[in-house]
Image 1: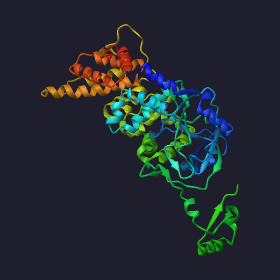
Image 2: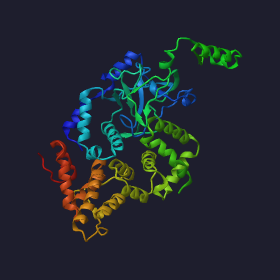
Image 3: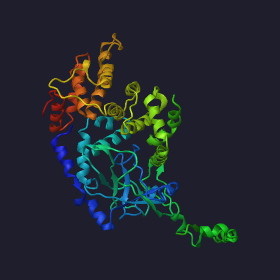
Length: 259
Length: 217
């Protein structure tokens, strides 16, 4: 229900994978791999290759999709968990909408403004649901397999909004209908990265723009540091003494899981 | 209220309500996906959805999620529940989700003459159109109110039909616009106002699809 000019503008912003920025990123990374950080409790579920869950909650940047980071930016989305799930993917034939380009964002806004629901978006309290609806409809109407976008949130020292690019990948349940279950396109995800850091990503339910490092910001200020493998530490009768020693010296002891 | 849905009510709310934040929504969503993989769970959920009779069984966010999930699984939510939710919700996006679910498999035969509201071939769409255009429940003593209130409800319904934008909902939009009732003129005026915010090419598309005259420039 939009005019030809708007359709042309959007189509101009959609590229086949081969000529898209995604292809260049994949080439620089040495292959089509993506990473998603999740909470530690999911580590065991991904000991063997498994499908990533498609995110379908309303407050997402580009609607119902699987949100991942190309592996060229391996720690960019570390703020979402300590466990990095890595999967390969096959992007051949994908239609890629590159929202990191200003003209593409403008095309989306023109399209959104021409939607009958647009006044609901700007004049009512229902904007979260309305945005979610519009983003899904946009990707369905134009058969967009992947949206590239700049991160909305940064993890201190891990994410660079100016240069990093994230992906929202669409799985189709039928042509033109977005799936919301488990991703087939990102379907061989395995627990591959363990990160010693935590970030607080929300404050009273609102996303934080720059999430501070919770652990390293403290440890880097402590002079006396040492580490001990956790399996040895558990049975080490000298462990209490070592902890006391670090306490008295103002240091810290890092108990780590040996790779 | 059904047992499984009443147990799932709070869980679905945590999963689908953005008030709980992205991290909470994601966590519950992953846990629910695991539940769905358990033998028998999906079948039980399907049976409960197909026979649910109380719209209070879930919160509005829970219903929105279930609606999308049920559509993807070709599970039909009872029509009375859909009508009750449609009449209750004010969010156009939420109402669009209801219409999308209710008309997911609906088709309409292309004809020279568009169907009229009284004989509209899709029962759900006919019900919600009649519900809006029937004025007998209005306060007939207050002439202005008796026109404005149903016209406003019809405006919202028109936007839903246009936004879903499938052949069957556009036929419904056209039927609603042509239906002779006390809110007819006000509804047309609203459509013209809405169309005036559009670029001329998009306005032309609306004119053609709805088979109504809208100013081209």
